[in-house]
Amino acid sequence: MTTAIDAQTVLVTGAGRGLGAAIATAFAREGAQVIINYRNSRTAAEALADRLGDRTVALQADVTDADAVARMVDIATTRFGPITTVVHNALADFSFNGDAREDLTTLGPAHIMAQHDTAVLGALHVVQATIPAMKTAGFGRIVTIGTNLFQNPVVPYHAYIMSKGSLLGLTRSFGRELGGFGITVNMVSGGLLRQTDASSATPEAVFDLIAQSTALGSVTTPAEVADAVLFFASPWSRAVTGQNLIVDGGLVNG
Image (cartoon, rainbow, N blue to C red):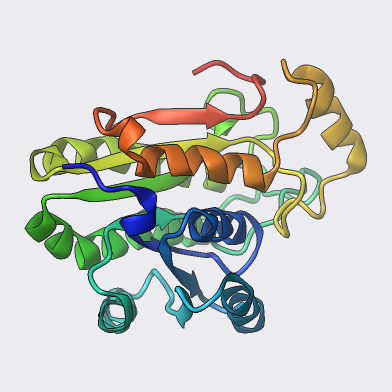
């Protein structure tokens, strides 16, 4: 079974701003119903929902809280019907500032768990809340957001990279378990994006260096990553699961 994007109901976590907002915008542009999840960015999320129209809604939930996620999914289902598609983009508070990062002398369990809980446990909670309806329908699309720092930790953001590595493992193992139900699970991994709140502290010289290092000669934008996410939700990817697509202008190879 395949379902066109304009017939899907899409939950995007961490969608109040940055990459998540770009992903929500891309799905709305293609005619999907979109749930804009946010944790703290209420004003931005509600403003985005207003701009995108009445086929979108902004709903608050901290993805590290399974009960809050379940309530959000119940509200969304009452409003729009069963969720068919999940994009897990939520990111714990983080700044891509190499000078301020934790190195091995300052890295502690709290840094690691903050990233892990949002990336990995958040994905678990969202998937557990949405797969019953997907299984019933015999169709589902789950997309996680990773990073090209797996391949090229040019700046060793240790806790962030560890959490995204675990999320890639989850993506592949969930893909194996859910494939028989018509549910695909894939990852899209961007590089440093120009520009999101998380990359606002990145010096311009770093953006310039990355642009010079890519095959396309530019820094990838949130809108470009969002379009790649659409591929994994589209009928064109119906035979693809457990994969990690790197979208960084050709900076690194898979």
